[in-house]
Structure formats: C-alpha cells, structure tokens
Amino acid sequence: MAGSIDSRLHMALNVRDIERSIAFYEALFETGPDKVREGYARFDLDRPPVVLTLNARDKVREGRRLDHVGIRITDEAELERHLSRLKEFGCWIREQRDIICCHARQAKFWVKDPDGLEWEFYILVDDAPETTAKAETAAEAAAKGCCEG
Image (tube, rainbow, N blue to C red; front, side, top):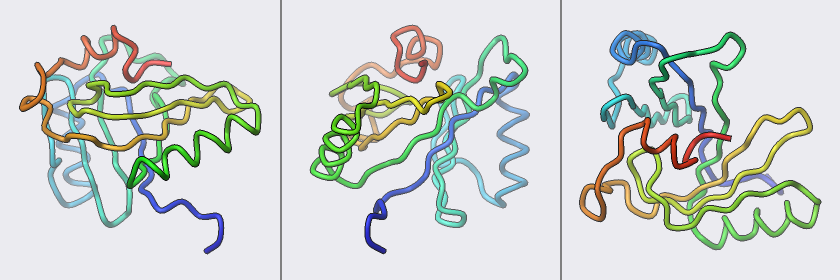
C-alpha cells in the first residue's frame, strides 16, 4: 500500500498495579509479556500486530490511562524519512537519540496531535540495555523524560 508505514503500532498504558495488569493482558492476549522489569511490562505481539507496554504509575488520573501512542520503525532511514516529512509539515517535534527508555536503547522522536496526544516514532537499537548500560526503573526513565510528554 503506497504511503503505509512498515512498522508496528505501539501503545503505552499507565497502570496502578503492574502484576494485576500483567495477569489481565496475559489472559486477554493468551500469552505472556516478552519483557518484564520493575514497574514495566511489554507485550510484543504479532496478532494483533501491536507493542503494548504497561507502565506502573503511583497515580493514574482518569482520562490519562493512555500515556502515548507510538510506531516502531524498522530502520534508521525510515525513522529519518518520517522525521523529515513531519518537520516539513510543521509538527512540534522532540528528538531523542541514543536513549535508554522502556528498558531498551532507542533512537526516537515525538510529535503531538492537535489535541496534545504524543506519538512516538522509534527504532530499537539494543533491546537488552543491561548489556550496554544500567537498566532504569520505570520511575527513573519517566523522571528523565523518556516516556513522559
């Protein structure tokens, strides 16, 4: 399909109880998460084709369960193509390169829709950050602005 993005949809949910949420999504998707860390879980699914992350937050405000939506891109050239076209369109953009976020080394950028919802475009550089840097807790990553808008 012309103009489509060769990628996978990513949704990040804020949850109050990570263990209870993991159990629910295991039942929902009939499979367990492929990555679990303190305050964090990731379901990287083929069916449906989505990367769902659960992020433990002390306070989950009503209407703020969906933290952000993202698109995992397959390579750097594709990431740069989307960055260029969205800059040209005039989007607000925040770039982050070589960042440890969601327990993986990533290159990414963020855009906001007209109502302020952030969309993350990213590639996984290293999905095992403990081999390249100290793994962060979800709270540490959020404090640095990793997955917080």
